[in-house]
Length: 452
Image (cartoon, rainbow, N blue to C red):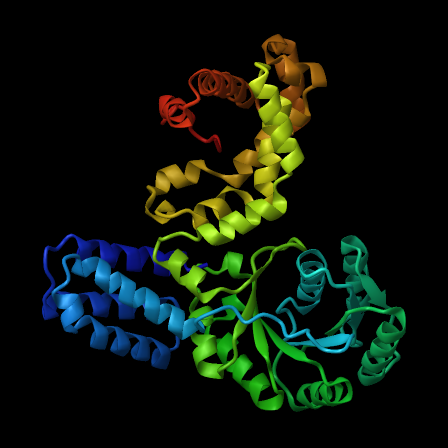
């Protein structure tokens, strides 16, 4: 998300930083570029106008004009205004009530409410140590209840059964009563959506809300809907006392205008971002971290948290111990490192969080392809344990068998083996010199397409 906006803003700030001093003309030109970039990112016009006015007022001040690094000072002002626009800090769920805490999800059909319900349940289980119960009140969409049941089984969450013959309000109240008896901490209620906002839909969701009095009423909206997302959020906000918003499908939205507009227009905080299809692809929304990503400054805090959650420490210690004893880093070890990277959202997700990664040449970024990572894992999976430990034995017939088994070409297998040999040499130098920077420097530019 925000890739187009980020590229435009970063280019504008680069021009500002290249100037020794700023004038009103320089700042005016930059603000026009920023305004166009915001509008092209589908940011609501009143929001873009207010942001520009606030930046202009601060950028024209004495502190900026007389700064030794005025370009950087303007970048700082834009960063601070973006953070303010999106809500200053993360708004966590308010679940400190007598159990069970009830969370109601509302939104249009196709926004991803059912998947989001499962993602939220997994988030609460793994990061908040809660025991959630999922229940579907969608008695209109075919197989909606079955879908939620399958997702609940996949993530190991509780599920309260319902049927299309029941009234939505009766389903929700029965689920809460069951949660109270069975000691569930949280009940996540997945409500029905429609293809458009209509009176009957709003009346039903009002009745459910009145019957269950949720502590959190979250509006789930597709970020790719752009201004329609803001408009539908407004409609739901008029009908329900919303407590927050979850933006879905942000991994597929290059513009990101909804995230910048929706807090300002509705007054409700964005609490989560859906960043993929997997059930673990739900991130708390931190305005400061998102603003930092937009401006190419990375998001190291999120990266550190992701590493702490997903990296298998025992496996990492095992590899480190193996190398310290002088044993070779083999293809099985390499595969495990790639799989750890996949758990953290893949290379693209990691790059997005690294400072300055957005300024990388497009060709270099294209080489760091998650598809390439999965292709490499497929090739290694097609090898025998002996071949992974001793890749030197892999010759003609073995290469053809591995390529056929992984759905790749012999050239792909050759490329992997050649590059892995280079990597082994690098690991040996790291062990001998104890200097990772020198070892990595020796391979710079020699491993195209490989995520090392």
